[in-house]
Image 1 (spheres, rainbow, N blue to C red):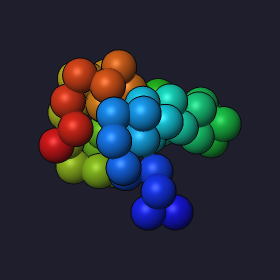
Image 2: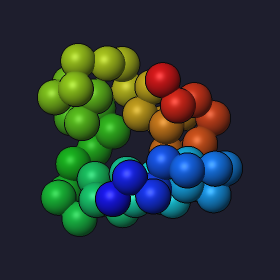
Image 3: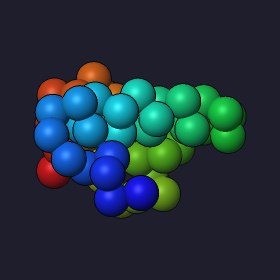
Image 4: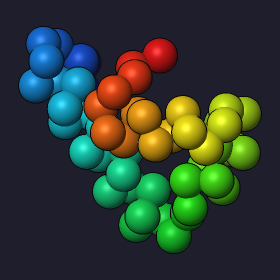
Length: 53
């Protein structure tokens, strides 16, 4: 599993999986943001691969 975090491609896989898993669970970005105690814009950035923190 730690392989996901190596290199630029690893980050790409991470943000693609975040969006896929969120949608599989029927969660909106707003709902996921609330569960993670972040704002919705953070989820959007993570899913686009814009921000990794």
